Structures are given as C-alpha cells and as structure tokens.
Image 1 (tube, rainbow over the protein chains, first blue to last red):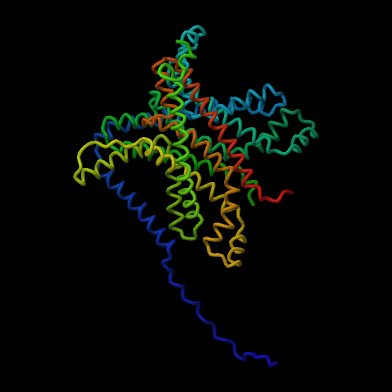
Image 2: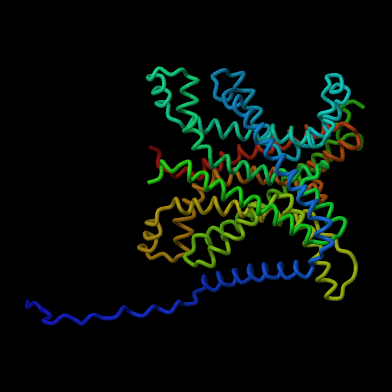
Length: 278
Length: 236
C-alpha cells in the first residue's frame, strides 16, 4: 500500500463562517415568552404612569412605609426571639431523655405541621376564651394586643423551624470534632462554642436565609388580625379606592425586600465560606 | 352547651360543617397538585434549556412568585381576575356583576406558587442525572421523547420525590389562606363556629389538629410511594 503524502501544506484557511442561528421551536417559544414578559412589564409601567396621581402617593406612601416598618420589625424581633428559644429546643430534641425529646418533637411537629394562619388565630382569638384566667395571672394586657399576639405566634413558629435547622446543622458536624475538643482538654461547653457551633453555623447559613424569607412572606397573615403591616395597609387602600395598583405596589415592595435579603445573604454566605472555596 | 355538644353532628353541632371543610381543603390541594406539577416540570425543562431566552423567562416567573407572600398572590389573582373579567365583559357589551369562584381563584394562585417551587426541585433532580444517561438513549436510537419517558423520568421521579413531598405539605398548609377569599375550608368553617359559639380556642385547636391529621396521612402515603418508586433499586 502506498502512502499518500501531501508535499505542500494547505494554506491557512479563515475560520468557517458562523452558522446562522436557526429558528428552532425552543428558540421561538423562548423569544415568545420573553416578549410576553417584556410587554407585560412595559404595560404595567405604562399603566402605573397613566394612573400616577400625586394625591394617591401623598396619601398612601407614608402608610405603606409605616406598614413596611411594622412588617420588618415584627419579622426581625420574632426571628431573634425564636433563635433564642430554638437553642434549648434543639438540645432537647437531641437529648437521650425520651421525655424531653418527646416534648420537643411534639412542639416542632405541631408548629411545622399546621398553617401559621391557624396558629395565629388560635392565639389571638383562642386565648380570648381564657380572658378571666389570663387576667388572674396578669397576662391579659399582653394577649389583648394583636401585635403582641402576632409576635408571640411568630416567635413560637420560627423557633420550631430554627430548632430543626440547628439540630440538622449540629448533627452534621462529625463526632470526631467533639473527640478532638476532648483530646485538647476542652470542656464540652467550650468544645461546643469554639469548635462545633462555628462549623454548624456554616451549614445552617442557607436554611436560615430561607427561613428569614419565609417569615417575611408569612408575616402578611397578621393583616387578618388587624395589625397594620404592609399587607393590611394595602388591603385598606384597595377597599378605599378599588384601584388595583395598590396591590401592584405591595408586590413591588415585597419583591424588593425578599430579593434584597436574598442577595445580601448570598454575599454573606460567600464571605463566610471563603476558606472553603478553591 | 358544653364543648361536646358543639361537636355533635347535625343541626346542633359543628362537626358536619367542619368535616365538609376538610373535604374542601383536601380536594383543593389534590386538584392543585397535578396542575402545579405540570407547570413546574415545564419550568424545569425551560430552566435547563440551551436557549437563553427560555431560561430567563422561567427565572423571572420563579423570582416573582417565590418572592411574593402567598396571601398577596391570592388577593392579586382573585381581585385581578374579577377586574379583568368585568372589563372584558364590559368591552364585549355585557352588563352585570360577576362572582369569581373562590375555589378556582385559589387553585390558580396555589398552582402558580407551587409550580415555582416545584421547578427548583425538578431542576436539581435533572442536574443529579448524569449526562451519560441521555447519551445512552441516543446510542440506543431512542427519540428525545422516548429517552425522557423511559430513561430520565423514572430516575427523576425517584430523586425529586422527597422534595415534592415537602412541597405537598406546604401546599396543604397554604390552602388555609384561601379561606380569606371566602372558600369554606377548614379554617373558615372553624372561624364561623368560633364566632357563633364563642369557643375560639376549641375550634381553632380542632382546625390545627385536622391539619396535623392531614399531614400525618400524607406522610404515610408518601413513604409508601417512595418505597414503590425505589423497588427497582439494587439493594447493596
């Protein structure tokens, strides 16, 4: 067999021309859907500009901002109080004592298995049934107020979720870490605080972020028990004006808060886990 | 009347009303599930498509409906539909009021929320399936649809089931929000009973327990389904 050997090299060729992008079905659908979104967005902006009314803004913007403040403070306080409550709960859940473990399990199951709305009504309307008893122990002033009831319900609710997050995170730390602490002569509390907890918090970071977002969204239910949060302000404005833009503005506010929290949380996570990134 | 009297069936008690509420809650969740799953699956397909515009369109949908409070979504769907239909009918020359069915509005709102979360579950399940599985389908000469149906889908379901189980429990709880637009579900019936009898703690406590029972029943069913889906897995 004779080998065919080319004596002269081919002259360098230009790169082949780009294949013209074909209009496949997916591409048409994708462009169509984007067109729908863009048209909807432009239509909404156009409508909002057309409906722009300085009286409306003067009248309702301060109320919206006050409602936003109520929402944010309610969520912030209940998350912090819930975090404090979740620590003993998580330890009860992990303990070998069946009574403590059972109580914590029942607590967590109840608050995670029932709607926040039902819990809120149970506390706000339900505790009113025991007015005489509550007055006798001097707690009625607390449960008479809708804001306090909302704070109480949210704290109990988020404590259950946070206890599960915390438990999962602590259990994800390998037992060798505890043994390492013991080998260094640290007491269990020191080992927990200096070795286990920092590693557990890294694992818990993402679920905590999700929990904050869930609480912001869930906090809208307080509008139903006369707490004037962002949702309640919106409902009041809608029933006064029958103008749908009241709801659009509420949606914008909520989306901005949730997206801000998400972006900030992603940054925080990136910074706190930079030792793990390669 | 004592507490037991309130819980009798029939005209004097509230048990039959509340039982009807349980049926409404369960049927709303059951009707929403397939719609939400279908939209969520399509969204997941769009999100892993090579076409950039399709991915972006699906991401916009998820960002909006995952970020809005469920209550707000429900009000927007309910009142938005009412206003939209009224204006459309006025434009067509009809007069007169229209009542939007709370069940339908609730189903749409819950399906929209459910699908935006379900798409993320499906997407991460898609990403857990190695690319070689698709190539194997190609090598066997299967069409794209056959590969999806006989190779990818069975594995996808198995991976996505735990996540979808969680979403189902969330959906069950979210149905409580529909009571605010007038659907006679557990929450609304319990609320009416509480207002009439002034036994709020009793009836809202019962409502909570009923939701717990529904959740427990669902977990039993789900663990059965998961076992059934895993029956073909090789046991180590």
